[in-house]
Length: 397
Length: 84
Image (cartoon, rainbow over all chains, first blue to last red; front, side, top):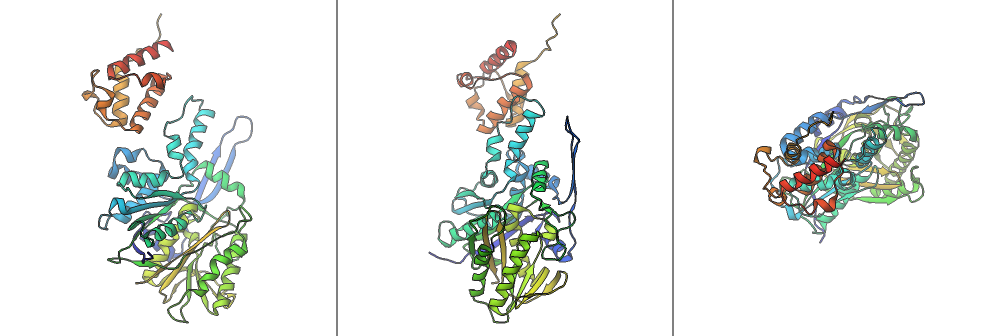
């Protein structure tokens, strides 16, 4: 079986707001959402650790209140990460007919947020001198905990598991979910990802990698100096039914660098991007439109921009590159799904936010802008640490 | 002079059950069995965690498995509390 797969709905939380529309409007306006995350850790024998980094924080309080009121006691015990996941899914399901629980999959991208319960447990023993940690520590820290929370709270009984490929986790989740529907394993799927990085452990750890920007992230721009971290969650509801659908899943490409755990491998990124040249386009004049991974790092963006320039040369045409991490921050395992949602909204509106253009190998030397364009397919690319890459695409109906 | 604070073990037990399961404490009685409460695994784990924290005791899983009613559990908690 290889049947078409459709997008029925989507949900999103980002620093711009707790709805897809809020995120879209911020992307359309092009104003960064980052504010400062300030950290001061007092230590016994040394100077305090003081850190202040730009950060795209989401409105966790509203998410918590909504989930607690809507789902009661079981939901109140969930971690922040699982609540974000549940919120992104629940808001996407509200206007849809009931899914058949046994024919629905939950495939959820998971990153580093699930280690937080272990960090809290360790802190309570080592710093607060307590003798025990919560018995939920193990269950809450499982990579699959958000996927399990979605299935358990919503009563889904089909296949449920997590995907983990760093920044590409939720793109892989959507890709696997679509493949399972195409193959007839299930009829519906809840796919996406969630990440809470507004946490001292996460901020200190990311600061040590040296990739954090000192100001606002400027993906694909001259003068860029790194990424902004962000909290976020996003879901895509996939189905085999075209009734009421928003878009159809198009070609998906994947590749792996297999050489370096942190540095992007040009050959692997190219291996993921160049197949786009062979995908049939509506007309030769159609631009290729991509919501790019575009984090804002010097090395990562360089590799991606070189590969996109190659793509424009191969296709002898225009590639329009949307760079929305300057608005949402890099939400890591949620970013693939969050940018897939932005890509879907772009397709629905025929607008490309924060767009750069590369044509026949040459980049337009301008600031990103909101572009109107006619296109029937949009891509969304994710390139994860470890060289794990995935490009999704969505087609107008 | 005895300076040990007075702890109502039964009240502590009912509070922990009520907090984690949502069952009102006035519906709890010593004759009720743990099985009758129909607690989930999470309810149970968190209830015992609360009791360990609040009473500052360490519970032994093999002993807990032998207890049936809330009265038996209360007596076990009282012994563990007195022995600490």
